[in-house]
Amino acid sequence: MRARRRPVWMLWALVLIVTLLAGCARGGGSQSGGEFQKVEIQPGERVKVTFWHAMGGAAGEAVQRLVDRFNSSQDKVVVEAAYQGTYDDALQKLKAAGPEGPTIMQVYEIGSRFMIDSGMITPMQNFIDADGFSTDDFEPNILGYYTFDGRLYSMPFNTSTPIVYYNKDAFREVGLDPERPPRTFEEFQEYARRLTVTQGGQTRYGAGIALYGWFFEQFLAVQGAHYVDNDNGRSARATKAIINSPEGERFVNWLKEMVDEGSAENLGRRTAETQAAFAAGRIAMTLDSTAALAPILNGVGDKFEVGTAFLPRPEGVDGGVIIGGASVWITNTKPLKEQWAAWEFVKWLTTPEVQAEWSMATGYFPIRLAAYDQPALQEWHAQRPQFTTAIEQLRASKLSTVTQGAVIGTFPQARQIVEAAMESVILGQATAAEALTSAAEEITKGIEDYNRTTQ
Image 1 (tube, helix red, strand yellow):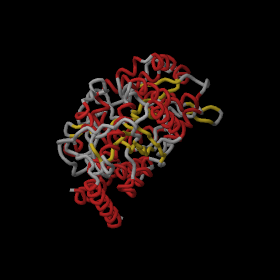
Image 2 (cartoon, helix red, strand yellow):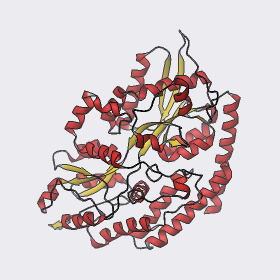
Image 3 (cartoon, rainbow, N blue to C red):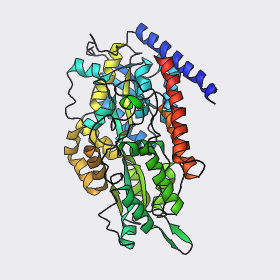
Image 4 (cartoon, rainbow, N blue to C red):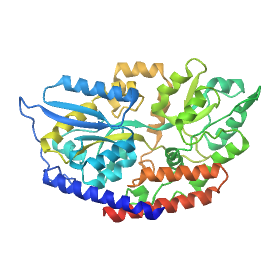
């Protein structure tokens, strides 16, 4: 299996080299900043910018509304947005397109290492410095993820964290205080036991948590543990996975104990399944992204009251969460004038008014503190107090190399490996120690292959 993976990394390396050479030939911006100069768009000019994104459904419609508003707000830049499928699909298309790709590219957070190594991008810091742009009003925990070696490489766009969703009516039924959600692993498991009820042959389980790789990363972080060595790849390039840690085993064993005792239902890897089960009242507690708040509230309707809470952590442990979602990158394979035109759009996206609109349309975090001063967003929050939980959890997370998140070029594959490992434990096919050790070895092999072809 591993022998078959190697040609893929070699192909990626070839894409990186070809794209970097093409970028240099076109005069793209350097990654180091240096003498990066601002290029003005002259009166009467209209520069076209292409924007590839991975937002489907309502979020995709929101993207197009923003693009249309920007285009009509000024007469120098025309942005053409194009949906490219899932995050994975979009990234594969970018690799295949090379110099013929977009000016602006939306990439999920775990694609950051690849984007930096690709040679295809001009760091946002170049534009920030040359334009005298300030990020002082930005959420520090959001900027922290996309900052490497003190430089912001991409602009946060759609940002989320996972939170606990729970059925307040079910809490009341079993004598639990609906205003006091579980705070620890121990409390969560005890609540799940009490919330598990069988009537008329139908069981409402206390909990249901998707076997999702993102959740595994979050539960390492809330326990203060790294995913890979060298401070999550932040102080130096990561060389190995260290997920087979006491913290990793504790989380997976916690899930298995609840499934084995019947207080949690195993619904597989997809959060869509846990969302549906929660909305139907089949499970009383679950985990999901903050961006899922609107779909969950819409799915539940008036069937029961929904509460939200911080992620639980073991008793006596106080860690934080890692942001998820995606950011936008400006490619250096286009002329500098086109890159600067792209920067105008990116800069516009960060304005408090636009950030408030984007948050209300999608449920993602605004990246600007000033966005929360917008009356429309304040009213939106008043109607959805559950979202306040997400903001409080984000701001309660101390920025560190743990909460900044891991940086590896093989993260999409690593998540799938971790999910398979978690599943094997839940199904009784391996112990947590066995499954995570095997997963760590496989992820480490992928990191070694990637590092060898990109250094």
